[in-house]
Length: 433
Ligand code: UD1
Image 1 (cartoon, rainbow, N blue to C red):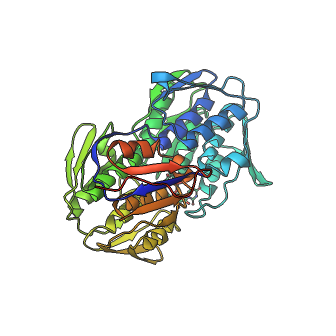
Image 2: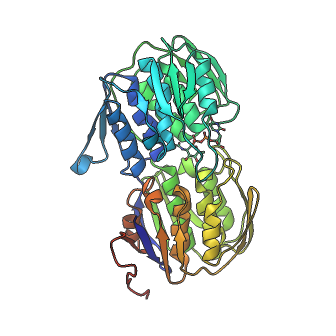
Image 3: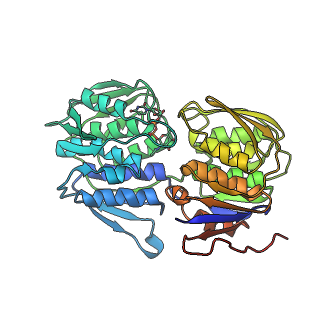
């Protein structure tokens, strides 16, 4: 298992380029299951979750070809001969988003067998709403031996009102409805940019969808979809993570190749805490000026403050003057990073869904454990401002969703190394000047 060794104290200076959005690439790869023809996706980030999705498509009988050289972020998928429409537990347990294939499979193949995801570090995360919604489109669903089995001659359009907003639920049902007979209307849908980008790909494949990105989506089913080529939007969570890194370390960082409109709630919050920001067409420049002040945050569905930025914001709050109250409204158990930050010297109290962060607390390097994807990113941020050396264990979590984060951070001045299990425990880094 790899670890990161980070020596804090360097301001980040320079330009960092943002990769394609993992959470858009995942449903777009699943969308390739809706057609026998070839789907070409550009700007696919090179992260572990997408390798898992590739494995899943290949196990089901799909052909997946990776670009190389300058085109190494291109993935070409053809699922003409699917002989095993099944998502096994071994893959679903490492990536819950594998369940995204359920809707497209039953829509195209008339049957699907997908492992039920268990709980995970950040909460129970059931897929009951996805299942209920697929039943509304006429699928027969049985659950046994830890698997969901769905069958339908052909799905038929229906009216779905989501009991609660679900991002992958909205995506999965939008995909399923493209091949259903008649019209589907979904209300209380997720409005995340990832939903809109998936709809753009589906349009290119011949789907008839209106309202993606709003609360109500209408889909007219068509008998078949066809080949398409699509470029994935930039990753807003990666962009947000780097903007926070710039604000915390007091440097002068240009976060390039991003979509500032997709991180509006975060940029507004950073302006409130006193970060100096210059927002361009596809760049955010953040000039750290040291004097950050506390501000409260509530996580919400898009366009609110994203739960996927909560941990990183907590790292920043430890360095802001005053008390910040962070309320997590989406997941019930998403504060695992707090205990690790406390071990580094942060002053954080957890009260149910609220974290009370008192700053500014001097952080000092320590050995810490990454518990999930965004928690690991927050520990990297804390380590960048801590005095001395931090060793972050279980960085496979961060590899699930951040492309070469250590190379990107090193490129703008961070002192950071990846070490493998086989290397000696103590790694000497150059002292900070
Ligand atoms: C997606 C993102 C994830 C992000 C989350 C919330 C992907 C691959 N992942 O996850 O990074 O943190 O949105 O923005 O895009 N729920 C149910 N029953 C269901 C479905 C959801 O109770 O059937 C609950 C969940 O447990 C959670 C809430 O609804 O408390 C929102 O979850 P949801 O939007 O579905 O998250 P994901 O789509 O899994």
